[in-house]
Amino acid sequence: MLAIFDVEGVLYDAEYLPILAEKVNKENEIWEITKKGIQGAINWEEGLRTRVAALRGLDRQTCQEVADSLPIMTGARRACRILRERGWRLMAISGGFTIMTDRLKRELGLDYVASNELVFTDGKLDGVHIRVDSDKSKSARAIIQEWGEMREDIVCVVDGANDLKLFEISGMSIAFRAQDLVKDRATAVLEEKDLSGIIPLIDERLNGRAS
Image 1 (spheres, rainbow, N blue to C red):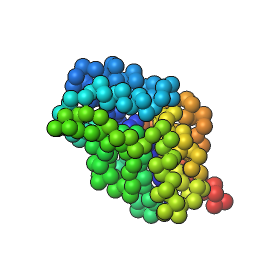
Image 2: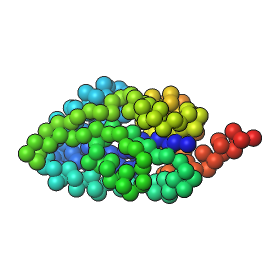
Image 3: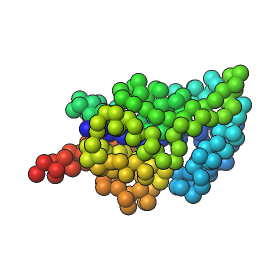
Image 4: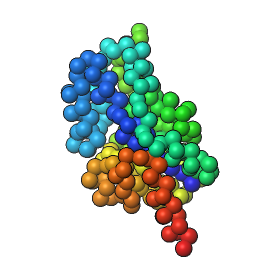
């Protein structure tokens, strides 16, 4: 069994770049581009490059401090602990960056994380290497095949339109505090701001399969 999580808005109760943008008083500009990218209103990859370019020159220490300060979502530790104890594998696929996801891998005991990487030159933010694009399923498929996981045994938990491709590789899709478009296509919806609420939803589905 495998659980795949989005990161910002799901495992973290925050969006990284808009918070980082506050350091240079560009939060409104960055947040507008972020929202359009999440909603699928603009090319996601180009939007990401534009946002990072607007923050070029920020020092690495500031970028790291903001990443380290991101609040982990209520219930995320409990949900991951319960799933791990049941023998599930845990994966996170993020349009964000290793500077923030490395911590999640450690603290939540994730088995695999795919994310992008900020580029620093002489200690200053200079760009981004995009490894996870708007089709997040591509970043998961090879690992799923390597692990031998079947689609019916995969659950994904997401919130944005840019996560919808993950539905194609998952037997169960949970919309967590998500946009209407995502809720309309998901097999389950969780509105409460407590990620551990996915556990009874998963149990309900597994019990239905067993009966």
